[in-house]
Image 1 (cartoon, one colour):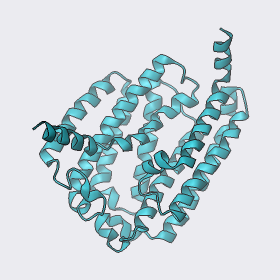
Image 2: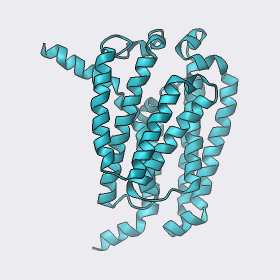
Image 3: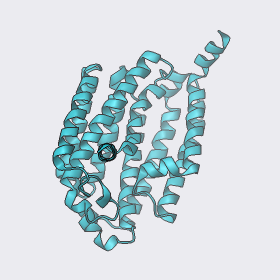
Image 4: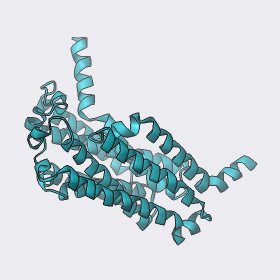
Length: 306
């Protein structure tokens, strides 16, 4: 009996896809680039915002798995998901979703009204995606992009800081890049002749088309980020032009990701790439350290003097 309960708990944890929570780290972007990462009070609020988004995104994943159960059962990997494999019933999944929803609501109430608006918007938009938009070519990846923008906007709302327009544009292009890369990887899998049964919208894409879109998205990401680092507002905020030296890390990261898509046929699971590819992990680490030292150098010197 204890083994069965333990197994059920593991399947419920798998159902809410903790690995996907990596995407919710976008809520920390505003506090990093607002120069308040060392502010304990604001950082704790951002942690609550992150937890709330983990909750609402997990609810969305549960709803997705329920609505996609038939198509998941013909997918080489997704057929092992808890609902598709019948390890978790639909009734159990819905009950679990209600519990998560209550916790998410309680956390959201501790933050601002605007944060609640963003998190509700995220939920509603994902419902549209799950039941309709995911079958509409191009619009499907744009709705994925909106989800990333809402994460960032919500993170800013939770701590009451503004976001640079260039940073919003960077997020738009980066999220489009990730969404299109996922479509490209799904089209390139060995059993691609059955791909339309796994995700209907893929019948309206092909590899050359996704490659063209990805080139535009990657270029847009790099250009918008570079322009953010040299914008007048950024220079005035951080009192330095040195943030431009973080741009090579962004360029390398985009090129490395494209290499993994084209040469290693990866990309179907973005979270696996960013957590398992050593080159991307090291690059991300050095990007963060470089950006942190440039943005917070004055505050760090003040602490050292004390």
